[in-house]
Length: 167
Ligand SMILES: Nc1ncnc2c1ncn2[C@@H]1O[C@H](COP(=O)(O)OP(=O)(O)O)[C@@H](O)[C@H]1O
Ligand SMILES: [Mg+2]
Image (cartoon, rainbow, N blue to C red; front, side, top):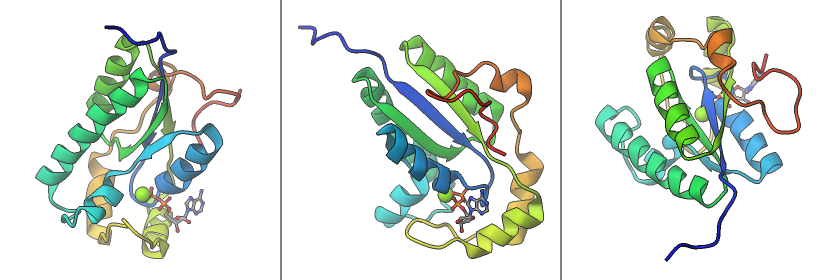
């Protein structure tokens, strides 16, 4: 039996390298928008798993995405704080969410490498993943930043007229 019709939800993707400010922004958006924030780094820590275990991270991200779709079906706003280094990864989720009738936002955060490194060294707290400068540089070398054409394919943040490029 079908339940009551619900307004489809809204998916918010947070994209950026370590230190870009993803967790800071996601916490603010979660409070402002009454959203559910799903942060793999924190889940891996709570589950006692190695944050550098890529197979575990991959399984966790897939499971959190299943959970996110359940929440979107119920009309919730969901924030995925995965980093989304690859364009194909962003496109897959954007298209899947749109197919469900959900709105999708992409928030892209960036800063110069030296600033990212300064922030990585400064960040602390539960679920913070320790990384080396070499790991950050390797990430920066393969990171695919969203361009204006890609950003234009997303919905604008609700109640905001500014573009979604944060800084
Ligand atoms: N826009 C910003 N400008 C300066 N420092 C920031 C900014 N956003 C976050 N930070 C600081 O940088 C560090 C890393 O931020 P965090 O949100 O944990 O980044 P991420 O989740 O992308 O690794 C934290 O100490 C945070 O307080
Ligand atoms: Mg973070």
